Image (cartoon, rainbow, N blue to C red):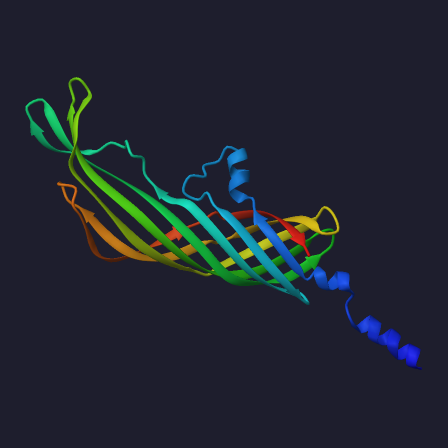
Length: 229
């Protein structure tokens, strides 16, 4: 009788290997894959990691992403002519560079499991972005197409943006071994961004102009490699 109870207790508890496989670590390959396929990755290029915990048919997930150039404009983009003196033209130019961190929690539920595993869920990310704006004047001789002088005025400010998102997704996961696997997710990744507005005067002075808000989209497909531990 005692032996039978021990057998039942063994069946009721998951094995050590099953317990380890309740945890999963993923690395985001979306930007690398887009680059290899020739896609544009400038604003949405990012690095990301994700951790999941499995409980029955539910998985709880946490992700962290870093966008090193969430906003970027080229230094030598065309400027705006604001003054003329003889053969020389005074231009105003500006450029910006932003960096963003996104993190958040989510939950997913298994739909079907055969050769792979399909699932549906929702993520709730929070984004923080800081953008550096530089503005400057320069003189140009349009006839010779030569830069006459810089440093007439040069200013820089940093603005901060905060984003909130509710991201529904549909995913499929498959394994190539006992622990290694891949998953792909299609999602509606639209975020509402709140931030600081700014205005650039002709003399390159930059002034902050209250609060702004806009919608920001992120990649609608995610591709990850994961490892179950």
